[in-house]
Each structure stands twice: as C-alpha cells, then as structure tokens.
Image 1: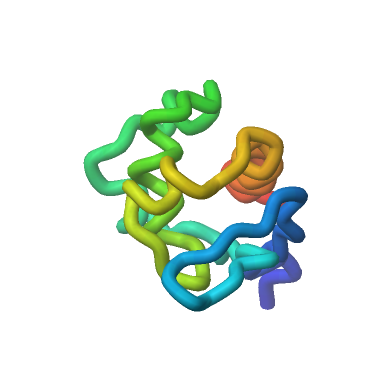
Image 2: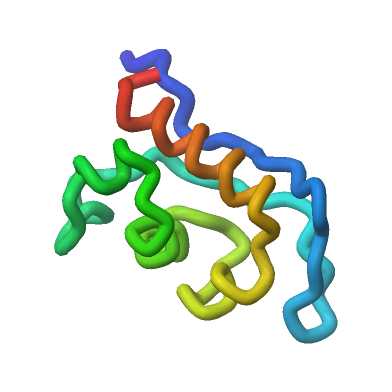
Length: 92
C-alpha cells in the first residue's frame, strides 16, 4: 500500500471570491498520467506559469477554469501550488 500523500491543502495568502463563494484554500490531488495529457512534464518541473495555468484546473478543488486561476490566484499562492505539484512529481 502506498504511503504517498494523495492530496495537499494550500491555505491561500490572498483569498478571493468566485461568484458568491469565498475561496480560502485549494486542495490539490496527486496527478495521474492522464492529467498530464498534452503537457510537457519538463515544463511543469521548470515551473512554467502558462503550463501551470492549464494544468491546475485538472487537479484542484474547488473546481476552477484556467481563466479563473489566471484572474484570481495571487502570485505567492501560485508559487505555493507549484511547489506542491513539484513534490508530487518527485514522488513525495
């Protein structure tokens, strides 16, 4: 049985609203190979922002579109989510 973390909770430094819903945290789930379809893992490993904008909606909760990620996610919070994804890619 795997002991790898299945999800990571990201407390947002800068909460935001989508509609009437206030978003204070994001939950990232461990990506599957299918979540990487059409993306270069090397771009995720290099923390390419455009690649992350496309990738994050595939693995975050609450559900958000790529445009919502770009519009609402603060840079510091984006970097925290990138670090969490990097840990997933490293098998942590």
